[in-house]
Length: 430
Image (cartoon, rainbow, N blue to C red; front, side, top):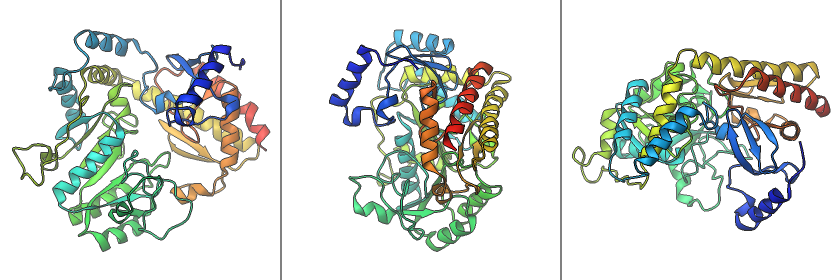
């Protein structure tokens, strides 16, 4: 990689001066490899100094068609020319809602919002209003955005006894701890025991069907569906990441398990600020003032809810994802990188575990399989940090600390370049 231009150095200095931590809060690169993005096209991005990167971060997932895809650019350009936002319900929001209902198994109704954080928050709130209970069970290590409820036991450093919740952010009221119960992902026995003991207090169970990069073990999601149905507890799938990535319609299509509610974002918004909570008609009725008592009605107002420009981007993106061969391509690209990572680490004597699905994955440096958050703590995070930095120095960008997001525009050359970089970096880790 070339060095930093004077312009980029000056901009980085301004970032440090004007932005807390020098950034937007999403990434935190070491100073030696820190950079500012200038533009992106296809599967590549360029920094202000002109350095080019193969991008496996892809905006943290939404850019499944690549940066500046012509179909999305055209749709957005046309939409902007018709008006940026209206506050009232618009045509494109209705058309996107129709497509979501037709493709997502749990969706009878859709309510748009602007972020995955808010979609998950809204799903929990809707379940509370419907069920008339206050507590929610989530899984240790699961990330459902940055609301007070979601930031419980996301990155705990100590092993608290389940179901005790631990706040992982400043500014969270202590009272929130009492409203969240924590269970271990992929442990149906422990989870069922917690649900059985607290079922009359629970408003919902929320889960990432694929938790970060940890795939569900066979039977786990179905078992979760069975026990929540037994007690009449709404099951929420957080599909902000997995929605339209694992399959058209989401993880609930891919894994064959239908929740009561789900939150979606990222891909369905085509890279624009758009997300949604969707689900069963009777639960979603809490957003309709004509159908519920005033005490149960949820007043969910947002200036940019169902923004027409974002909805246009979403419609264009989903149209591309429906094309023949789209998912086969997405999965095959991911499969090559995923298998290459494992092979190269194994050849160099590093203990490695592949994790996730081919459409979203990474590795752990450990000898034992990773089935939940605590398993992941046993992996060597120092090796992962060194690998990530070595790759970035060679022009390969991925999510830190873990996650590759394949896209439809990643080429064989991108895969080859990535694996060449891995072959250069891995021997230095031994």
